[in-house]
Length: 516
Length: 58
Image (tube, rainbow over all chains, first blue to last red; front, side, top):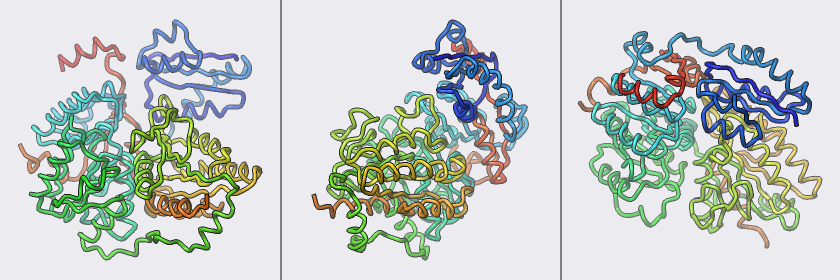
């Protein structure tokens, strides 16, 4: 198939911008595949994999833009590349204008700055963050793929300077009511939160808000912070900050299980903490935490939110809990639509924490489930692209996101997977998540609406119903209009819940009552 | 120095330097936070030897 490329020397663009240009190019009629990326070694390998290589590409540098397309005819390829200037210009409109190129220049412009946010390629992030710390700035590092030893070094440096190091691989923080990175818009209140996972914090803070409570600060720590290699340095610093903060009355930690030594350090810290501490460590063996201790445990994020609200004395609106027994008639009616042989659940998630929490709830209910990010290694999918029996997939996993946008921004890969699952006659339930908030997709439900309807049509044509269950993480204050997002799903027959835990518990009831 | 000192980000209103994704700066502006955007590029054109040298100098 005809292909072509252009290289623009010394034109650097950020990854979100490149993705939006790529999306625009790949939607061009006659274009089969396209790639818009900077000339890093990893990107050049990706191009090679799709059959585009040349000495010109080999010599491209990380600050050179490469645009490559594969099209139906030589003409479509040439047209697409000639149109590039127009697309770049059109996509550039609207972003903040800046003439500042370095941290030093930025500090001269804003000497009162107290936080630097980094979303640069991982290989450069540690150097930049170190400079920021030495300049007296707290840091939020969204960048990932930073070696452990560099993370440790940055966090030790932060500690010695009395500065907070959120990240690397930090998706979410809310400081003073301001969402940084991927964050929901929540009211201020007396509950402080700490956690390594962006979606974990998003779900917790949204639950608190939706139940009538508020967040003092939510501090993201980075995905590796609770490993024994890092020892929870940022988590411990965040606990100290929240303990000292007059506006915080209750503190919650939402995370995957810490390393053994780090868990012990947290328990020790919990004993001296002057404020109530709620802990939710998804996937941890129940027995290992129910030793008498200073932490009140929540099994799910919802439990942790409910406990935090209680501890903060917030009179909550009724948290719509899925009761242990939904009306039998409703469950029977849903199950009666399933064709014989349709019995499995497939979860296709944008949020890694949701994928993880769903597994915990299923295993707790005695239902084994496979995953590409398994809670139990015995249930590792041998190929992330292929589901088996009950399966939940984290579409944010590297397998799906290498050189491609995260599913919270772009639903293309998730749409593909949903249709694959719908075509499998063994599948009875499709479980989805939708995540709202700053920096997430503008219309997460709208982006997948056609796909969901196509999935329903595919199943109807094959006979029987596909039950689609979804949770929406967000608040009515979010930019995406929570009410409208829920309505769009409900109108096409999707069963919508306001938390991942509730949606999953509903699925458990459907699965448990099956006559096999 | 401890967290009680002036570096404590919870004791002062946020003033942010955003290095990288412009969309992050845009969402901060939307929330009325003071932010300065740094249009970052790989230092030394991404040449690792040159970067190491620069890091020693800076």
